Image 1 (cartoon, protein in one colour):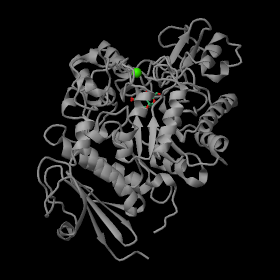
Image 2 (cartoon, protein in one colour):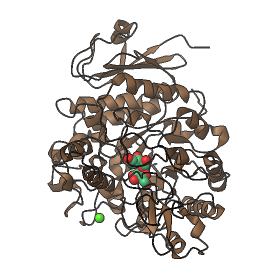
Image 3 (cartoon, protein in one colour):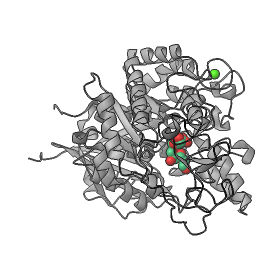
Image 4 (tube, helix red, strand yellow):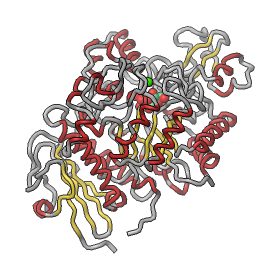
Length: 569
Ligand code: TEU
Ligand code: CA
């Protein structure tokens, strides 16, 4: 069957967080030669694209998401020559490279910001968001900030610059000032930089918080949620009035008319299905797909630190709505994990008795949906959250600041720590577990962050050697996307919406129908799927138990059945 669809509809992307992937020179920090040396692991897994988290020169306030030079490599990670070598070696294996594009903000040490800050008359003053103190207040005093917004990393979004008597905007850390995309010079500089990377041979971009680049003018106070110290500025900066215009312009200026097969994915906190249809409609030429956040918020309350138990029907309703919403227009990205999320086997699975089985189940449920799956380093091993003993074990700026501010306001330290252990980004950033030697084979030196002690059991060498491992299950899932067209291109129908433990859906393309059934519990269950007895005696395309059969699913069992049906005309 020949299907006319973009190349990335059958692709799988693997995300590398370079600092935690593989260290080649014993300084305890992962680097580019380390990645290159491990490409065969990725080739064996069968992935098509590698997304590299930022490797650019950076003061590392937010582990590289604070960039001080967009057109070089931080010595921590290597050199431009190392990057060229990685691109060449990846391309040799048929793997494309997607760079992280962090252009909502720069580092405060980027020459653009240094220049902007130098004087109110600087030609680059307007490249960032400078504002005077709130009328009637004393510049620099608490409450004098131009708006009442709280930042993602605690505290206000405004930093006072004594020299000029003005404030600059930073939605994230004070070392991450927001660029002013209203200024056409900013946009042109970013597009020129993107073209430079494409000319160098990279294959696309993952665009950091790209739906925050258009701010609604004038900047104004946000509502203050109950119990919060600061206002919610998000209505002013999420999917602002010019966001579609900017992304269409970017596409025109950077990609249009260029030969090659590229991938663009926009990270978009707070994006709705309706917005995503517009962003990913091929006729509008903005981005290929977006990262939405709804399904990774179903276990969170008013803030991400307000941890709620998973309600499977809520998760299914959310992912199901995205499947439906982007069925006829646009395209989904599919992910459980990235460098900002806790490990999914600990979050939605069982990282104890059923670690292997539930990790495979989660992979199955995700990869059998319609969209482009993303695998985050270590997910293919079933890596788990880490046993952080105390606050000193947390290194992420978000965690460190949250602990300081929350406990300063009187929160119980034990409770704050509990939330950090469950939701903290550090869980994703412990070193990749390669083998059972000291520090899991990640480094010959002292790792920048402690290795999860379970590495003696959970590691790549053991997983590759074991045909029943999570690794080989992911390898089969990735292969299935290429060999069974219904996986990439079939339509999707959710089943059993209200079932508290069974995740079930069908996929259909032509005369092929697939059924996915998965038991999200530690008890056996009979799925109430219509005609399941027949399905169960038919073809089992893939499962996470060697001998899965019969009308009942074992604890954390997942099955993919296939049957032939009358083709839809
Ligand atoms: O993250 C954006 C984001 O909004 C969040 O998911 C963020 O990670 C945080 O958890 C909010 O609670 C992107 C990057 O992925 C993240 O690593 C960066 O810290 C952030 O942007 C700033 O560049
Ligand atoms: Ca290193």
